[in-house]
Image (cartoon, rainbow, N blue to C red; front, side, top):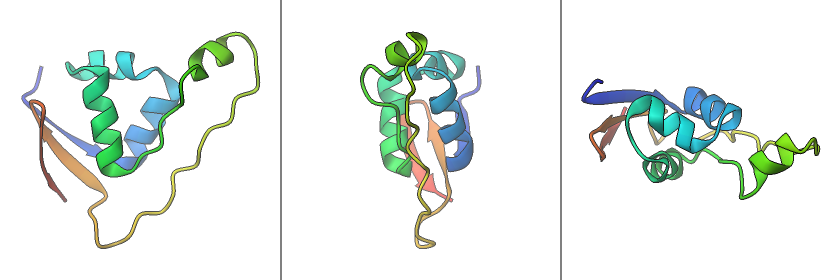
Length: 88
């Protein structure tokens, strides 16, 4: 497992909408809470409570769009063992 990861908003958005945050967290060796904090920091919308249960039950679920982010902020973030270092 690497000590740091470099995330782009678009890739993180795709990951959290294709599988639960717990699975994404396992992939990177962090908790689902850390993934949630990362998404908030990068302003990536995440599925609400019950999204995965409704989807599994066959309901039509709506995916929130990834809104354009101001150029004042970086489009990616370096994440080092639970600490957010800086936007790039």
